[in-house]
Image 1: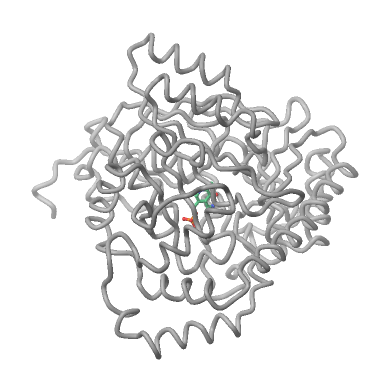
Image 2 (image 1 turned 90 degrees about the vertical axis):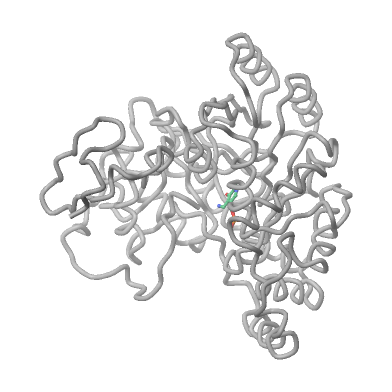
Length: 446
Ligand code: PMP
């Protein structure tokens, strides 16, 4: 049927035997090498069940949009189309709308960044910016250094471009400068080419920690000395609970850092608008790479966000998000202290996540099916490493459920950890996720 294809996958030369009921991919032998590194995580199937309403999901990283004034945002969208429709529904600039780029400067000033609108490239979420940066810098086999643990969606991008990911240890103050130094020294001594240091300095996903102000210049100095470009991914920086933001790494070094920002957590992810700020020459490559991927970011989304920023109290909205997430963080940490005293966890002062270490001998990945059956879900730590570490950890998200549901979820989780959970047959029952028509991304990805 496909005479131009020889059977067999690219690595083994033979076709794997399909499991009963699964369909063989007739194009298996045709994929590019990089496609073999793209795999759905093995825990994804479980999340079809975890998304059901009876399960408390502490897994997903979906922002909680309940506090947004939907009527006002709806009116803004309607007005954008009615008054600027010919622009909003047309192709636009590959670099992004100029007015929005100026407004983005105002957002970034809150974290000490002073840039020019020409320095900003608007992207389809910061996820696309991660893809573009990796595409223009990383050859197969190049090393990307990332925190241990690291954002699963970034690891997926690095893998897709066949990077070698090397993790560096963190503590409660974020990436440890001495650990970075010794990793870069040993990679240099092996003659390895390190292209990027990927870091989430604020309210880390998944670790919940923040890189201290004191360490920021130290990390930059080490990266500079080893000739490594820093990729600073900062979607959560304005979501601190107890203090003003720490100045971004980019504010300390505009030649050695590519900064990524996003409206996904401070406004809403649905418009898919993020941005990159890069050194001049890099920015030109980013625009070319973006044009070849998508021609231009959505004008309709950009104009809607621009109108939101110019007509609504976006700073006030961020303040109310911070209060909402703080209340949820308190509910989670309180419930952990009450129900899981033998575990340990990080204490996030912003963002969406805490990183929990299980009591000795427990394996978060093995435990997940049992947890889902006890109607609670989390993401096992292994998802956040490129090398199989993390079995004794899990990421718990406090962003989405109500404080009551968070407390109930932790109570159920404690039962699973103690081996005393009340199990319910969710796998045998039929039906959708209880929210027909609503499709959410694999929570392991967000
Ligand atoms: N970076 C980090 C650390 C994230 O947590 C996320 C989303 N969960 C992203 C990037 C991507 O966000 P977006 O594409 O919606 O801007």
